[in-house]
Length: 122
Image 1 (cartoon, rainbow, N blue to C red):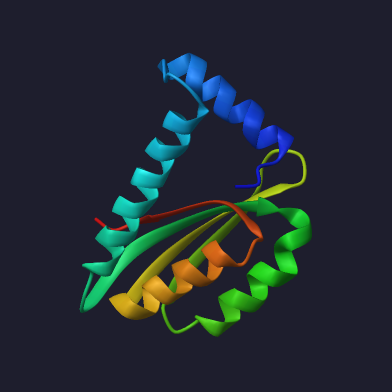
Image 2: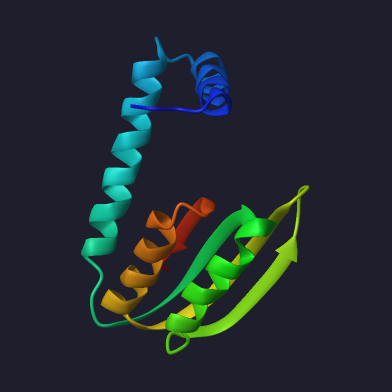
């Protein structure tokens, strides 16, 4: 597993703040959360409404926009905000087929351009 120095510092901080016994425990806990989120998304079916939250660097805006245009059929609204230095926060209100919404989420997640992604399905 390759991790950046910043990720290692963040993992160390979480380890100390939450009382994990080591980095491996932090990484396992994170993996469990990702697995559970993935399984929850797999169980979605039919037409759904959801919110997709993205945090990315400004320099990734062209890549984010390209993906967004591929999924205009399910994006009702997008709110784009500039937050921290060189960061953008996008909030998408989605409505459509669950499989299509999963595809959008997966496309962003695997693009390597997104720092944070959260799909919320009420």
